[in-house]
Image 1 (cartoon, rainbow, N blue to C red):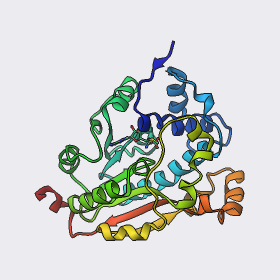
Image 2 (cartoon, protein in one colour; image 1 turned 90 degrees about the vertical axis):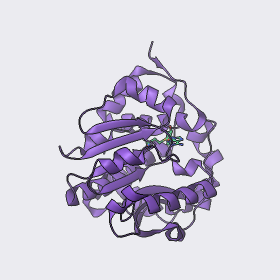
Image 3 (tube, rainbow, N blue to C red; image 1 turned 90 degrees about the horizontal axis):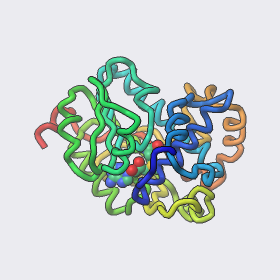
Length: 278
Ligand SMILES: C[S@@+](CC[C@H](N)C(=O)[O-])C[C@H]1O[C@@H](n2cnc3c(N)ncnc32)[C@H](O)[C@@H]1O
């Protein structure tokens, strides 16, 4: 008998990218080689087989693009601090640990209770219980020192536009001159949710439609990069199997692909030290 799962509606969606990464790890030309995801899937008592369709591969490609944003930050700031807001059962720290980074993974208590069955804190890795909308996680992250990278993958989409933009404004003020990465979905993608096989398998629905991530610059940040599955970084393109590289280039014009954006912003402000005073 595996680990039982008792998760809220949004929390349950963490099992979709987990299963996508586990499936990817079993392929000879795996993108992420996330063998821990296979261990988690094997240990959790859940009907993962109900998840089908392109979103499973999409979760892998999304993780690959976000990995590269973080990798580049760590190459500029090897002793920097990373916080992943709504980490689910992500194993990004294991993939990107450079031996110096201070890493925080935050998620709500029911998700964290599941995560703690598989993962433990260490001297440079800390799990935090809480909501990304709270400010309780700010102090440990700021006190870790060094420039901060704030990441939130496949989480903000589940909240309303008002909730997200208010929080982006708050974070921009609290973390000046900070790289902030998150995904946005346009109307074409949001309108096809009910036809997406993975969303037929869970009750949660995404709420935030954002057709142009540049409009978020009004929240106190500057858009550095905005990628789609058809436009990954050159440095990772070769790690993707040909079926993704060629297929997605051809599909790059398709509205659901074109309007799902993996964004990297830089918040305004002079120095990150200012955040301690807020
Ligand atoms: C689709 S999953 C993404 C998980 C992970 N980022 C990944 O890509 O594998 C959505 C995640 O958002 C988390 N979540 C839901 N509400 C949250 C909140 N208020 N603050 C932080 N995380 C939240 C869920 O627990 C879940 O882990």
